[in-house]
Structure formats: C-alpha cells, structure tokens
Length: 322
Image (tube, rainbow, N blue to C red; front, side, top):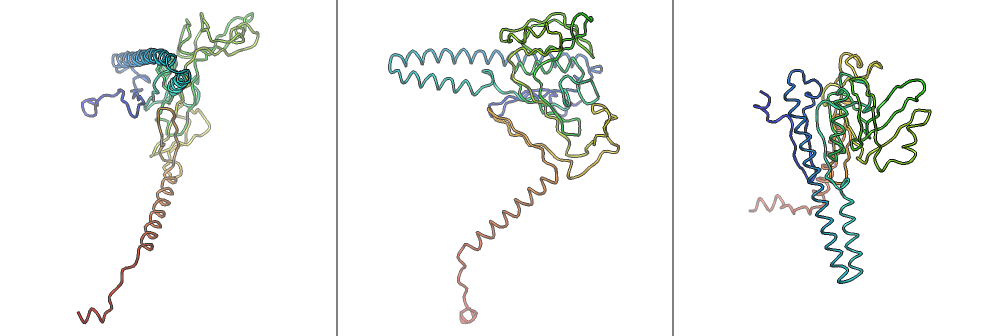
C-alpha cells in the first residue's frame, strides 16, 4: 500500500555529483513481518555498492591511462609541461574519497545513537545487522548517515568494528578493530562476537600486529575505509528529554514529551563533493533569523526609498489654475 501511494521505500539518486542512498531501516530493525522484503533490500544494497566500486575502478583506470598519455606527450614536448600535467592529475584525484564518489545515506532509524558498538536498544539497529550495514556503506565511500527516530540530537563516528573476545586466564582479553576490508572469521550472536581468526592487512603497523600478543587489552586498526559519521537529528515536533536512565530504550526519557521553540527544530545540511557541513537550528533560532532578515530588508528598503530623489510637487495654486 505504501509503495502504491508514495513509491519505492529504498532508492538512490544523485545531486551535484553526490550519491544519496535512502534505506528502509524498519526492515533492518525488525524484518519478522517481511523477511523476503528485507532480503531483497540487502541484496540491492550490496549490488549498488559493488556497482559503485566497479565504476570507481573504471574511472581510476581511465585516469591512469590519461596520465600515461599526458606524461608521454609532455616528455616529447617540454619538461615543464610534464610537471604541470602531473600536478594537475594529482589535484584531481585528491578531490575524491579514496578515488571514489561521496555517498550520503538517509534513513529513519539510526544504526546507533552514540557509539557503533553500543548495546542493542529500541532506538538503534541490533548488532550485527548494524555492523554489516556500516561496513557495506563504508565500502561504498559513504561518509555521512543522516537519521531521525530518536527525537533528540545525537550521533557519532564509526571507524570500524571492535570485536571483544574473552578467553582463558592464560590468554589476555583482546579488542580488535576490524574494518570492512580486513579478512576475518567470526562467530556472531546478537550480543557478542567471538573471533576465530583475524588476518591483518598489509598496511597494519608493526605495533598493531604485535599488540595481539600483549598481556593487556589492545586495539588493532585495520583497513583503509574513511570514517562514517552518523548524525541523529531531533524533531520539528515533540522532543524526548532524557531522564538519566536507559538512553537507548523507551524508559530513558521523561513523560510527557515536550514541544518547545527552544528545543524543537530542524537540521540544515550543506553537502558538496568535497565537503559536508550541518547545523541544528531550533524554532527559536529560526524565528530570530527570520526577524533579523525581515528587519534588514525593511532597513534596506527604507534606505533605497530615501536615497531616491524626491519628485517635485506642484503647488495647490498651480493645480487650481490648471
């Protein structure tokens, strides 16, 4: 019924050279009522990410070929031209994220509230579905994920997966941060992940590799994906004020919800190929902004009218004569 009236519940679109992915995270939160729909969306997302990776690889190959041709021509003509060509190519490639295109994700339910490795709760997506989504999107150069649902402002940055393993007393407890590109085998349940095997990637430092054998808990970072920022925005309507209890559940806020101009509002995001910025404005902020703009326009209008030459008025006597 929803699709018939409103259209697709997950899709991609492009604006200004930036790719947007809209997800139906209700299927990630609870797919018990529509398991087949959830499976189809997961397969679609994987295909979209792989498609983008293939497109990026093709563009990389084209740029490399263009660079070779450019360098060859430069050597034949002028050494100075060769230097200019190389700098130009490097500048162009530096604009992109790991050679790819920026992707922005949009959804209602956020993957997490404050920490990508936080516990499961009403307001986030359960682990390990959350981790799979984050890894998949980061592979596709997703740098920001804008969400709602929480009716409070929150968010955090995901840099990879922290896997905690508890072993016998003779072996230390180890925390390993695993990015999507690393090779690992693990047993995953809803509340913990037990690592069976972790293979470090080539760029792992010596300290990272040796950290696995230290007697105290260590964190090893592997992979090259850019961090993904999750931005959880409050509502233009009711706001849920925290009560100091469970911040992830339905018992973590005061009853009733509040509706106040100094709390309710909206987030303004400016998204470009090379930069993303966002800022929260309350309704009170917006009213002040509108008021200031209105006063400024009135002043400008008044100034314009006073600057214009005043037309000469005819005297009453002259009008009477006419």
